[in-house]
Image (cartoon, rainbow, N blue to C red; front, top):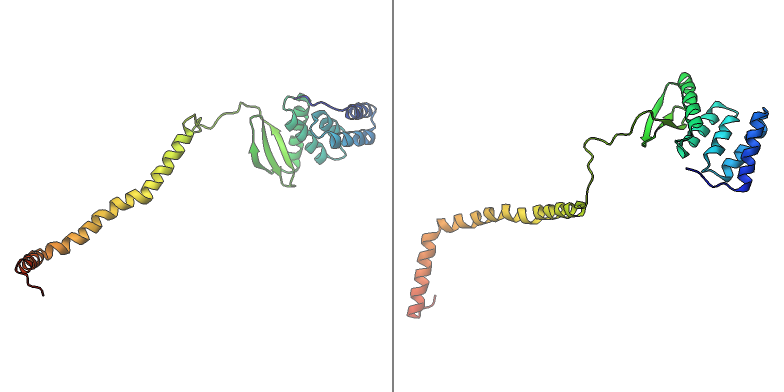
Length: 194
């Protein structure tokens, strides 16, 4: 994706390119360093900085940044692969951090965060489905089922237990209750009170 560069940054990048072609690495590095600080979203600035980097670590970081800003930048991609291969010869440890459709992000044992280009098509995970327009409906359904389990199912489970607890003692005392009701009604009819 092209980044609109200011006149000052464009001039710095031209100076860096000329200095690289003339073999003046320090001058090129200073110009590209200033360009990356003024335009951190410019892949060309990072690429030119990698060309004049004083260390292989800085070169790798700059190429990684240039590639992450513009995955279609073929020179950055090619040189990044070469730099990663050199890093793997020095230290064969890279820890997976993250991935996108075009790159893997890994961390080296020295703590560098490196973007490595993919050479394959990005595949969606098999079980990942498009949620579709009914996602909010299903969310509310899950919430209502959970609420039903908390309130409704508890009532359905406890109601028979409660009814059973009341009915058994009443059934055992049924003769005495009938007798008691009969005696009370007779006493009321006669006008007697206890």
